[in-house]
Image (cartoon, rainbow, N blue to C red; front, top):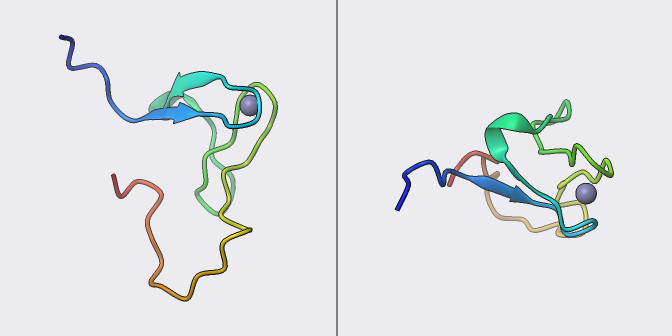
Length: 57
Ligand SMILES: [Zn+2]
């Protein structure tokens, strides 16, 4: 298997898949879909847990 299967962005909105290294990020550091503009901001989850880095995988 190839080792080029790094982090991949899967857009839940338009179902596009792209390497995380080739997609744009917004000012907050969240990935933005290059196709539909969907921003993967966890706005719906107002958890009180510690901040997670978007690249913490
Ligand atoms: Zn999308």
